[in-house]
Each structure stands twice: as C-alpha cells, then as structure tokens.
Amino acid sequence: MSPEVPGGRVPPGGHTLVARLDNDGDVLLAGPAIRAAAAGSERLTLLCGPRGRAAAAMLPGVDRIEVFRAHWIDPEPDPVDPAVIEDLRDRVTSLRPDRALILTSFHQSALPLALVLRLAGVPWIGAISDDYPGSLLDLRHRVPDDLHEVERGRSLAAAAGFAPPPGDGGRMEVLRDPRRLPAGLPDRFVVLHPGASVSARRWPAERFAALAARLIRSGEQVVVTGGPGERALTARVAAGGGTDMGGRTGLPELAEILARAEALVSGNTGPAHLAAAVGCPVVWIAAPTVPSVRWHPWAVTHREISRDVPCAGCRARECPVPGHPCMTGIGVDEVLDAIAAIRHGAGLRPDVPGRRHAPQPRRAPMADQEQDPKTGSQQQQEQEKWSENPQQGGPSQGAKDSDEGIGPDDADEIVNAGEG
Image (cartoon, rainbow, N blue to C red; front, side):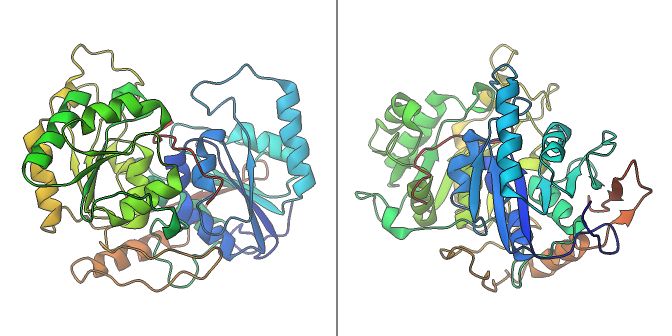
C-alpha cells in the first residue's frame, strides 16, 4: 500500500486513475470530483465506459481516457469474458497509477473493479462502499442516502485528500469550442430534447409536439435535438415549424447550442446535465424512477416537474404500469408555466448560483465565479458542509472507513444518459 498522510488520505502528486463506468450524464456529474483529483495529481487518467466516452472527452483535468465496458455496470452487458478482464488488468498495470478513485452511483458496487485494480498492482484504492471490502479498498468511504451525484463524488475526493482547485465552487464544467456551433440556428430559442435512453423516463412524444406547437404559435423559436437514432422523433416534434437538429450534433455541438439557448426542456437524460455544465436553465420533466434529489440538474436554474406515484423509485427501464401515469400525468400547460417561471428567475435551488460559464481551457485553473446575492451564502454553507473532515472509523482488513456527514473532437456521438 502506498504511503498515507493522516486520516488515511494519500499524498499529492503522481498519477491518479479515476473510474466512472456508466453513461455520458453520469460522467458529466463526476466532473467536479475529477477536477479536484486532477488538481492534486501530476496527471489523471479517466477510465470510463463506451457510453460515457463522449462526455469524458469534454471534462477539464483529464489527461488520458481509457474505455472499458463493465459487465457489472453496462445495462446491456455481454457475458463475462476472462480475456476482457485480463486485458483491463494489463492496461492498468502498464499505466502504473499511484492511486485510484472509483466513482459509483448509489445502486452500483465498486468492488468488482477494485478487485481488477488490485490484480493490476494499484497500491491505493478509494471508493464508496456499504459492502465489506476486505483488502480491496484502502479507503472505504460511506455517505448518507439521497446525496446528489455531484456531492457524492466530491465527498469521496475530499475523503481521499483532494481539494478543489482555487476558485472552483464545485459546479459542472465542460471544455467548449464555439466553432462547433451548428449553422442555421435562430437568434433566440428554446431547446426541446424529447428523447431518453430508456422509455420509462420519456415524456410522450405527442406532448412534446404539442408543446412545440404552442411555443411556436406564441412567437417562440424552437430547436429540437436528439441522437442519430431519434430522427423520426425529433422530426415529429419539430413538424410545426421548429428547427430539427435530430442526429446532426455530437456532444460538443449540443453544448454550444445549449450555451446559447434560453432554456432546455428535457427529461432525466444526459443533455440536462450538459445544460447545467454550460449554464442553460432547465425545465426538468423528472420521471420518479430514481430520486430527483440525486439527479436534478446541478448548480443551474431549473424547474422540476414530476408526479408522486406509489411506484416511485422503481428504477424501471420500461414502465410496467398501464398508461405510464408518472409521465402522462404531466400536461403541456404545466411545462409552459415552468418555462415562463425560469425566465422570471423562479426555480433557483440552494445549490444554484445561476450563472453561465465561459469556455474552459484544458487543465487551466478554474476562474473565480460570481455568486447570486440571493444564494451566495447558501452556496458557501454547502461548500463548508462538504469540506468537513470525515470521521474515521476502524480499519477493515486494511481499509480505512470514513463516514461523511453531509446529507472535443472525438466526442461525436450523443448518448442520452442518466441513471444507468
């Protein structure tokens, strides 16, 4: 095991491997934790899944990207192949990282990857784990339920001894290239993104089409976005006069569109998190398949629309309830009201400073950011809460326990993402 500093943390410098093995949206949410790890390292490698590769290419602080389709994370896994696992072990061995942080969601286990990293000779590994890790982890970090994904990752980074870079308030950030802005967009517009990776999180297409028609009749310009497999969907929604960008953008282009939009309307999907990263206000039509407290758009003006149903928290990919009531129960008028509300400044949350971000250069220090006078003190309290030293428990077979007390050129493909 590598040398430790007091509290079970690792000394700064060296090569850090950070793993986040699921979708684009999840990788974007890992950005603040990755920036903290990068600030305390000489170089950082991000190990991601193929569904998160496009987002990984847009994160500040990442020097190298490795891709691995994890059999225990991917929603459509292949049968376990020993040769694939051995290849990952050999790749990590050749990288010679000094330490690794494994970022996971509340329903995922870090231990399968921790075992592979141990076999690859990684000397220090930290992760959040309720399960007993034996000798697989040097830092077994634990957090309460209903912690937002951004806070979850930042908490682990802090427990490992990684502080954010100066001026970094923990917001979402992506590398941007204004040259990737598609031509032919209106001057002012609202973006509708009707797709999602799983049907249980989609607001009905006919509601999105009706929303677009109502906005256009009222004089609004509407841009409809979607992935290559969603061209028929976006064409249907844009049929009344919207600008159809379905299948015509990768994540870098979508980031530039969202950075110029007045608002995004979407469900639980990666573009909502990309919007947060560029400061675009979000009307979030939230399917209650996972708790919104863990997944809402982070540190950006947003308005959540959802329905409290008995089956909330089901994590279903296809709704088994006839009529899909949690989504069909949301009407067009309610979404129109939400768009109007965020334009008038309503919808700010305590973690929201409500500021658009300029493009960030790779590995550049994060610029000091202004705070909304209504929320600055709350943001400071949140940061102070997050940065408390974790209480250390007794070791478990070599693992230090911690309990946290706080509640782009190669990115050419949109992968709708959220909870895997």
